[in-house]
Image (cartoon, rainbow, N blue to C red; front, side):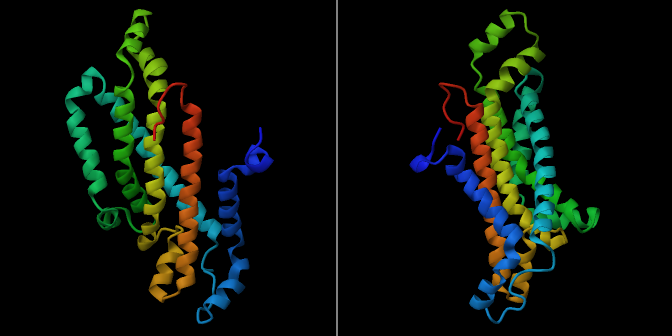
Length: 254
C-alpha cells in the first residue's frame, strides 16, 4: 500500500515522522548548541548538560510505565468488580475515590508522599498512579456496560461460565474503550511526570525547572519540546493500537 504522493505507507506515516523527530532531537540535542548559542548568546552552556536527554527520557518513561501499568491493573480490576453483581453496591464508592484521586493536585500528593517515601521517583509514581486511575476506571466501566446483553445471554446459553463470559466476551468487546482510557491516562502522566523533578526525580522536566530557576530559556524550550513530542508520539501509537482493536461496525472509542 502507498501513502501520501505515492510514498510507502510506513514512510508516509505521521507516527514515523514524529518518532524520528523525537529521537533525533533527544539524541542529537548537543548538536543544536550553535543554534541556541546564536539565539541566546547570554546563556552558557546553551544546551542542558547536567544529564543526557536520553537518560532523562529513560527515567521519565520508566516512571510513567510503572505508574500507568499499576493504574491499569487496579483500574480495570475495580471496573470488572463493580460491574459484576457481587460488586455493584461498591460502584459509587469506587467512582468517588477515583474522582478524588484525580482532583487532588499532583503537587500536593508529592508534598505528602515525600516525608514517607523520600525524594526521588517513588513519590512521583504514587502521584501519577492516583492521577491516572479515573480515566481508566471510567472507560473500563463504560466498555463493560456497553457489551450487549444479548451477546452475554448467548454466551451463557452456550454453557460458558461467568469467568469464560468475562474472558471471551466482555473483555474483548470492551477492549477498545478500555484502551482509550489507558491512552488518556498515559498521555496525562507524561505531562504530569515533569513535576517529579521538583522532588529529585530525573525527568524531561529537569531542564525545564533548571531553566526556570536559572533564567535559562533554552533549557525550558529543550525540555518542553521533548515532553510535547513524547506525549504526541505516545498518543499516536495508542490511537493506532485502538484502530487495530476496533471491530467492524463499532463506533470509534475516541
